[in-house]
Each structure stands twice: as C-alpha cells, then as structure tokens.
Length: 240
Ligand SMILES: [Zn+2]
Image 1 (spheres, protein in one colour):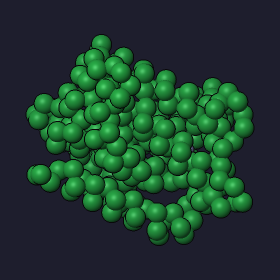
Image 2 (tube, rainbow, N blue to C red):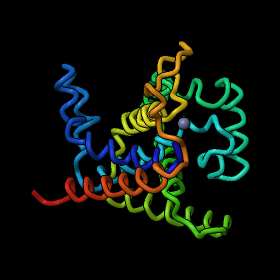
Image 3 (cartoon, helix red, strand yellow):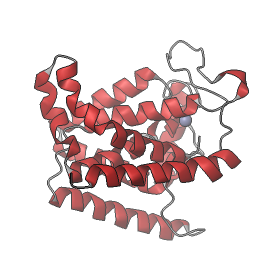
Image 4 (spheres, rainbow, N blue to C red):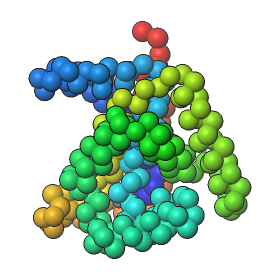
C-alpha cells in the first residue's frame, strides 16, 4: 500500500474509533486507565490524535528504504530505514506484525508518561510524517517541499501546544496506527506476517488483494479515504 493510503486510513480509524476508545477502560475492567482515554474526544486532542495516528500508520514501512517514510527526513531516515530493514529481516517482516504494533504503542506510552521532551520529539516526527504522507509540498521541488513540511509541522505542533493537548493517549494512537498499517498491507496481494515471528503471511484469498500503487488505490481508495476522514472530522467536531 502507498504512504498516503496508510496515513489516511490511520486518521480514519482513529476518528471512527475515538468514542469507543473512551469507553475502553470500563469495558476491560480497568477504570483507572480513564486518565489515558478521557481527553480523546475533545476537539484539539481529537485532531492531534488523528494526525499522530496517521503518522504512526507510516512507521512499519521504515523497513523499506524507498518508501515515503524513509525519504521523509533525507539521509537520516534513509540510513535508519536501511538499519531497520537489516535488523527486521527485510521488507514486510518484523515491523508488519501485531507484536511490533504492541511494542511501539507500549514504548510510546512509556516515553510519553516519563519524558516530556522525548514525547514532544515523537509527536513532531509523527506530525511531519503525516504531512509528508498526504503529499503536501511543491511538486518536483524536494527542498522547497521539505521547508513547507517543517513549517507546517512546527505550526501544527505549536497550535496543539497552545491549545493544551495532553497526548495522554499517545501510546494508544501509535499502536493503533501501526496496526492499521499491518491490516492495510494484509489487504494487498503480498500480505503480512501478522503473528511474526511465525512467518505465515496473512492475505486475502483468491488473489483479490489490492495491487500497490495501481489504478484502484490511486483513483479510488485515496480519494475515498480522504472523503471518509473529512466526513468523520465534521461529524466528530460538529456541536451536538
Ligand atoms: Zn507496509
């Protein structure tokens, strides 16, 4: 699946699941976790959550040196992705699994709860990734696009800061974003090893999986997901 499909589906799933997420602590019998989920539905937190989840939905492709994410911050992300590719066993291995999603979510939660500066750096990276993924920039101008990205990322982060966004839900958004990516890739013709380290790939039967970057994804899925994200945003932010 292409970067923008992953990012848009991450935002869509977060916006769709937000009300259910706030009831999760009661549902699983841990009401003390309400501090994590309580702010999710308030306006600025909801938008921040959707953006962070969109960025996190790009993370598993850090194992692919030519994916959007690997090219986001120049040689830094390219080198990082070369390293992840080597350690995780190549494209669509360890990072495309349930285990990776849970570990990424738990790691982000611990970072968010204990290191405010680390948390802010992670949030800035996720915002930058989300903006890059949906293709905001100047066509054919890499440097100008990078400057636009940095400017927009800073503006969005500072807006969230001014509005007092807590990021209590950071780990949840990162974990869900990664999981949405894995499910998205399971809908493609190559599938994913969801239960890694078990190597079996999960994919749709009878070769009906989406072909990455082809007509269906570019001309239908991308626009459809954009409409879903905008519709959900309107629905959630509209005064009752
Ligand atoms: Zn992938």
